[in-house]
Length: 114
Image (tube, rainbow, N blue to C red):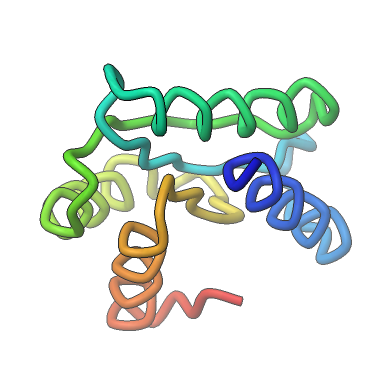
C-alpha cells in the first residue's frame, strides 16, 4: 500500500504541475529495496499498479538497494549525469530513508524537490 500511495501522489502532482518531457512522458527514477524481500516486492508492485493507470508515466531506471541511503548517495549523482537530457519529474523511493536522501542530494545540486 505504501508504494502505491507514494507513487499515486507523486504522479498526480507531476501531472498537475505539467512535468512532461517534450515527448509527453513523465519520467521518474525508482530506488527499490532488496529485490528478494517481500517488503520491496509489495512496494514495487504498488508502484507498477500506478504505472498501469498512467501510460504517460515511465520509470527511466529502477535500482535495487540495500534499504540504506548509502547506495542512493552513490547512484543518484550518476543517474542525474547519465540522464542529463531527460526531464526527471521525481524519484520514487521504497522507504523514507531513500526518499529523504534523494531529496537532500537534489537540494545540494540546486534541483529542489517539491
